[in-house]
Image: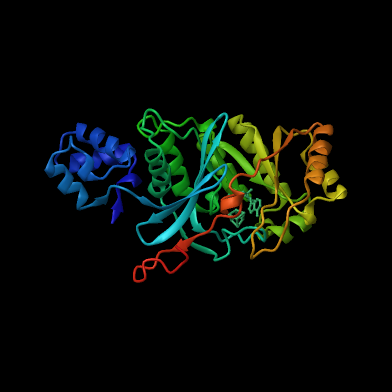
Length: 350
Ligand code: SAH
Ligand code: SF4
């Protein structure tokens, strides 16, 4: 069945008019879906409207199947209408609450350190499914459309957002729309493994979300060994696209660098400094999170601090991203996809 949360406000209004209902019903349906409510919970809607829409559209796109509480983060298992499951993570910070959402079931980029791509790409999420992740958590935590509990959204869960370009852009437009959740673009960060053409296209959309580029290595040889996507999107093209994004949007680029043995010796960091110097960007160092199937490790604390110091001394802003959700497999690169078997009701580890 189609999803009500997949419609932008204009499309919703068109549906209301086509159904022969007065236009203001669109605002009521919109309020219902922004509160992540079902038709039965919308007391202001007459039966005729409920019958018409419930026959055509599911009111909610995702259901929270399970909440896993960790010491500094909370992970959710979102059940999609076809039985697929994606994960998201809620992180309270002193500057506001962030929600990390997934953009695809699985991922086809095959980075060697990441759990999200272990089963390849299963399917893209629709715009309404991404919105559903935000709406479900906001409602669960007692937020409303005008008084949100979520302040920042990061597209850093499973999936490569720019490999699902059209749906992600529609989601970004809906979630920043005053008729949507009215997020400021500066409160949304999109992380990409570096699809350079799509980075340029996103710059031209003029939405202006914060762009995070997963670099993870200073040379093409090292990067291709960690991230196969580098073979078709070499570092020079990714950096040129990031420069273009900055020119067009004025948003400082975030470079993500996950520290592990293969990319953290002094020689590599010197090359990294040479590559990044003079650009308007900030480096987020992430100590590589352990993924059991991948068998790669991060570095000791002292080495991480030393690398941050080397970058700072060269005039490159770099901070160590506090790894949240480690204890619940909810940190960067640890999110997975699952499938809820209809027959067994959960043979896939649920
Ligand atoms: N596909 C996008 C966004 C999701 S991954 C991307 O790759 O950018 C979010 C971030 O987590 C990326 O920077 C990714 O490189 C990083 N990441 C993946 N696996 C990781 C791991 N095991 N430890 C630390 N960071 C990891
Ligand atoms: Fe996909 Fe990002 Fe994981 Fe790479 S790091 S496999 S692009 S989710």
